[in-house]
Image (cartoon, rainbow, N blue to C red; front, side, top):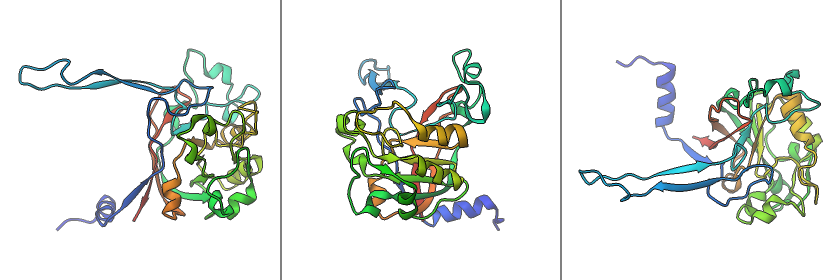
Length: 270
């Protein structure tokens, strides 16, 4: 007889049937990238047939060059400082001596297996995509889906991922990008989420022509409240399926001293 254990119970639940919905964008050369960060590049450096072993076998491999804030990624708490300090009052200049962040590096971002909620602001407003430079307020978040709680991950859909294939529109340098404003950031912080993400390049509101001149939402979440930010999410499939809450699964890379990590988040459903 097999003894029941928590592990066995979890495996039995999985065997009973679960499905996943992708929440991240694919990584490809030429995808949209903030001008503040080096872009993603991938190329094959060995092709099949470049070298053939005596038994007829061959292998192919690639070289990948990317910034830590390119494609779907999560911000470490070392990513933003305010008045010289990182989260918790850590001296930012001192923490980065030696070319890596000795505190709040990307290796400290926890794996996240927790309740996720989709706050579908575009759907709540009855539109496919929010307008460029349109604010997502606390009232918008409260009306857009289940209320997140302590330890949850809130993912916010503006519909902007529909522009991912058109870099100039998606990055919004001229016309702006919709996103969470300061009231929305405070609303998320008050609910104690461990992370919040959206389907845009900067998560927060980017007014027309402003670029990333100031990023108050990053200050509120990362510096003041220790809440991780996930950017470049792909939420169209989740919206089309009518997801509201789910098991959110995401494992950042343990990049020692880094300021962010590429991720592949998924929604898990029974």
